[in-house]
Image (cartoon, rainbow, N blue to C red):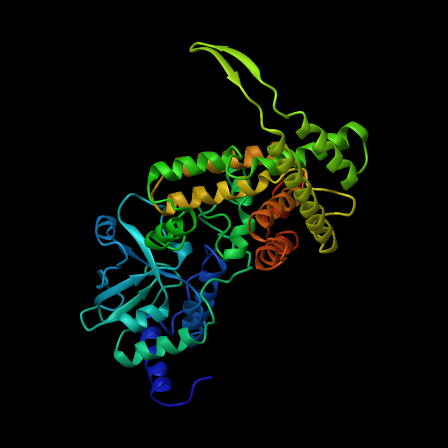
Length: 438
């Protein structure tokens, strides 16, 4: 709680102004279905004339405003200093319009949306900006706040009370504007572990955190700065060419042994089988007739084969220890094992499609096509959401975790538990494969 004083007086003034602009004293119009829980909470606060509560909700969200894509591309690392004014009859004045994410339209080439927080607006508002802040104008949850210096200080106090904007580890769903059934939704649900971890809408094919933030994130995490590089990585993820082929060889060998002999495959048997297969690759020269003539191809040397055998044996140890932890934590049923880590590529492919659209490296139809493919290849390789989840988490851990069972694992365990228990989870509302019951 903040101390009583100028800020609290400003709150009263802001509330009175916002209430007047929002039509205080009149019955609130019915809203059959808000696009998400955020707008529903704003609407309810507005109906109560609870402007402090309204600002508390805003402080926990990214707020989006229009911007020129050519200007942003020509000024990398910068945002337009001035807010684009729009005339609103509700306050008979020019306003700076901002929107919560679920209120945004479908992405177009230009203009784009950029995101900032309520604290950012409080800090950066200048005398040259419009005198009013318009939140979701034209919607049932709209509100208008005067932007004087004292009221900007009030916004900052609300923002300071929020630890972080993204609700990490939380399932967020678009009730309107995002698919909740059908093959596109199923494909997006393949990326839901990361969506829950990042606190973003799992079923949104839209703007992400805004054009500039999404481009920056793709560059930082993937090195993607062009459409061509995005296309390359998107395809490699969808064909499971991004992750180590050694993982798939090792897991696939165990799966084959289980099918051939039935029951569980003991680690010692698994290691022996891997060694036998790899030793068959000891250098033997082969002669091939090609259009360029006779070609002599050498296999790996004996030293290289020994190195590969040692590496695969270590990998088998890592996998068995991860699976033991997975079972202890309820991520993998007792007696079950991970058949493939390809889910990590497929889940990332669903999200890469989202990132590509938000960064304008692809179009909406291209993103939807990639998401559909992610759903299809996942359904071929796995039998259930839980089966898929274990494969995804194993791939992520093999790449990042180094058997520390740190944040790379704990984050996914949290997301897995949310997705397998939250009644609104697509893993509970969508069949894993088309035509399956749920």
